[in-house]
Length: 276
Image 1 (cartoon, rainbow, N blue to C red):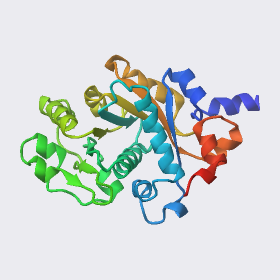
Image 2: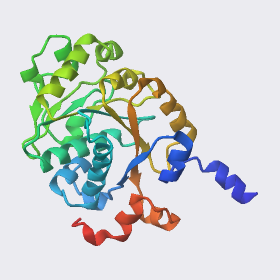
Image 3: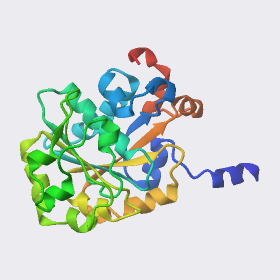
C-alpha cells in the first residue's frame, strides 16, 4: 500500500522511456542542473559560453545534434522553445543553447528572439545590455531593426529583446508582420531561436509555433506534472511540427542512482571527458 501510494504521489518525469511512453514524443536532450557553487556570479548562459567543453555545454550540443541529425536533408532554420509552465528552464535553455552555438560556430550567424512579451528574460539571462528598441516596438513600427537588434561581443550572438507586459501580445505575435519578420530573419541568419511563454498559461507560444521548423519542449526533471505535460503537448497536435522533449535541471547523481540509461547517466559516470 505504501509503495502504491508513493507511486501515485510521484507525478514527475525522469527518463526517456517514461516520456516516450506517455507522450509519444522523443527525448532529445537531458540538461544537468548547475550547482550555485559552480556558477559563481555568472548565469547558466554565460557559463555555457565561457565553458564550451563542460558537461553542461556538451548536453546542450547533444540536444541540438539530435534534431539536426534527424533532418539532414533540411535542417531546421527556425527553432521555438517553450514549456508547459513557468520556471521549468526554457529561457535558460534558449539562452544557453543560442550563446553556445554562436560561440562554437563563429562563421554562422545566429539570432535569439525574445517572444515572451509577458516575462522577458533573455537580456538578464545573457547578461547583455538592452537595445534601443524591443520586438513589439519594431513590429508596431515605432523602432527600426537597427535600433532593436543587439549583438553579444563575447559569443557573437545576435538578440532581439522584449519588454514586460507589452500590450496585445497575442495579436502582435499572430500578425502578418511577425510572420514576415521571422521569415526575413531566416533568410539573413543561419539559425533563428524563438523563446516563447509557457503553453498552459497563455496562447502566445501556440500562435508563434506556426512559424517554427522545430519545437523544443522543456520539462523540468522530477518536478513537472506528467498529466500537465501530456495535456500541454496535446495543444500542438494540429501544428504538424516536429516536437522534441528536453529534460531540464537534471540531478545527474540522483539520476545515476535510479539506474536509467539516458544521457544523464553518461554525464555523471564519465565526467573525465569534460573539463568542467
